[in-house]
Length: 199
Image (cartoon, rainbow, N blue to C red; front, side):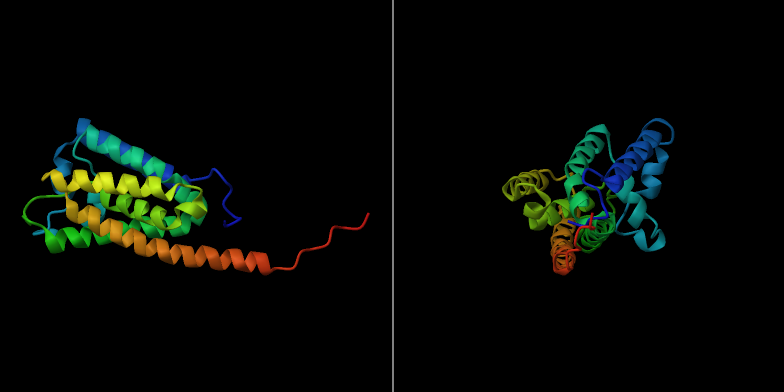
């Protein structure tokens, strides 16, 4: 485990939760029109590319927000294990792959999509690869993924494209993160031990 990140520290996880909650509360109670303005619509994204980013921080309702934030909180051990930089790479990369999947495979390109689910599915995908090293039960993570995919494909209002795209991206980036963390651990293990100072 990278020694520069103290155990129990997951600043990006909590920062993402805070940003998502604040943005959603502002839209729900102050300016609901921002939802349509900053959601990702596959047929229109080329004219409004900022929605590739902004849509990841929008949520359709309180249930959507609550479910995603609980799932994001569960992913905190991943940040503790790989460190904030690799965690950010997995989060952003998974969200991007989710966006690409939505644009490429949208059933109706005029229907807008919002939510952090693509990024979160990516974090779960990475945890499925790194769970044992991160101190998380891999079987539990796989169970959560399977259940959520089941819900995804049985609810036509859920964007399966974002979920599957994010999951694939996160698993691939999880493999990369495992190579990086394993290399760092080997470097640390190969360093000669310093003798204790003489009394």
